Length: 138
Image (tube, rainbow, N blue to C red; front, side, top):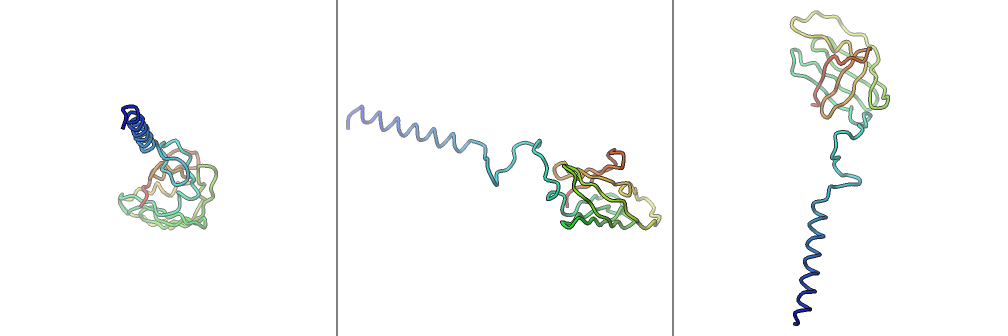
């Protein structure tokens, strides 16, 4: 084989290797790809569904259903209501709750009126839009 033919084969192999390396190192895109930025908008309608809770006294928790229901406990008193999605926020309807006095339980969850999702954290806000607490995905 001539030197020229050897150089052409070597160049073709090198170019192919470089192309495979660049492709393997490129970030994924398209359906099923993992987002690479936390600035991606959250589809709260699907992300909110499930159980969110805390290890605080009484283990406060909320469970959001696909059907727009919310059930849970502030760590002492039961919660049952509904929610609607509004952009990147879910609005939680006012609810009636029992009023048992439970020592050592912070009942902040009774003031919830809307929520947003930040990763695996549900950020709870009151009617003024102030953050009143957080629950973690369970």
